[in-house]
Length: 255
Image (cartoon, rainbow, N blue to C red; front, side):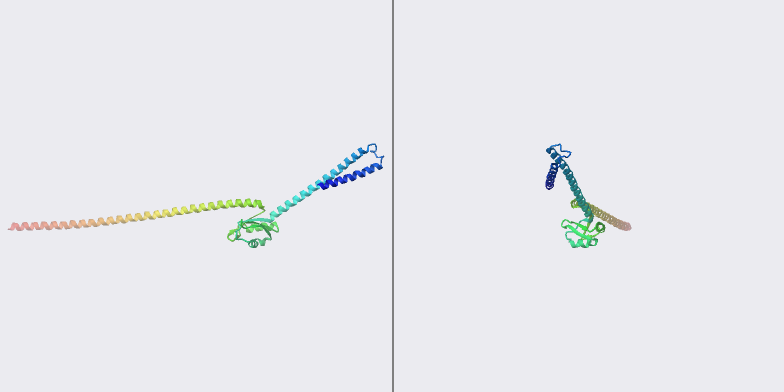
């Protein structure tokens, strides 16, 4: 900007000098009745006006070029985002060769930010169509060393960090819910087993009561038989005793 002003000042001085020379040579000009100082000031004013317009045009050109370059940068970034996919859930044991095998068949250009320790990276393709096809064929469909790869298209670095943080929270929530389901299922199974144990215990107790009842009935029957036998024996003894008494009475009567 300072260089342009310096050139403009030099140009202004040359133009003023030229017009002064022309003014000296032509005293019959329409402005001859004016003093030299007035003519000089008028010429300077006109010169500044011309250079100011030229300077404004130069500024417009610079602004135009700035907008053009900005548009190119935005367009290039947007086009690059369409060719770049964000991949996460990568195992720490993965290598670039593993991703080359998976994405190499989709016109892989290069992989950026291979941070496998964080489980994510950016992969750029030669065209947006290849990137879109790679996402469709790999996302949650291809497993790499025990972990299912997940990927999306057109995510910037800052967005990817936020996205992954959100994804981590979602995964933690899913794991927590899964653990709660497992605990509930385990408790349900324990209650079921407890009910079966109680049922078996009640069945055993019922069987024991039936056996005891049978034993009591058997003992009662035995006692009844014994009592009947005792009664029979007692009657026999009483009958024999009466017979003896009758025989003794008869003998005494005969004597």
